[in-house]
Length: 185
Image (cartoon, rainbow, N blue to C red):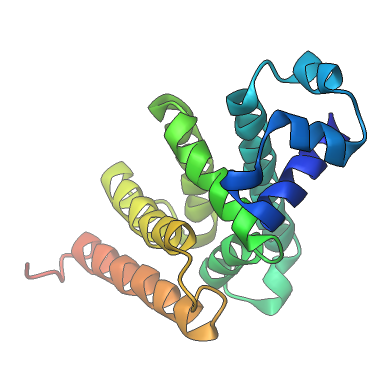
């Protein structure tokens, strides 16, 4: 199955969706079309499995960075950098796969992924109220998701990372000020 998924990722990177067929994946993987259909009943299932793999790789990279102390990085910066870093190499394939993942993943499954992100955020930034955690995680994710899906040319620029960290820190400062009764708004 890994060989098939790797072949699918290579095809997406090289040819995009235009050249992505189960026959092309089978040929690239060096397996029969029957082997592809044994694991994936159709092209959509293959795409979903590839997107799940990419999502899992992203999660593993985030955990690796956080467990390693983010190489001396602040936890919020480590989270942002891990997300951006997950898209190093094969950017086209990952962009396509993640776009399809968002389309195909039920809202409940997306919420579970956000719960894991919120737990990490709470561990690194202190416990947030559920609404504040929701707003912050979705704001960061929305900017990152849009950058991935739109294929912006600054995605890997330090300035983009800095803006996301600035967004996170400004919001957290407002949340803390409100909690301490200093927020006038």
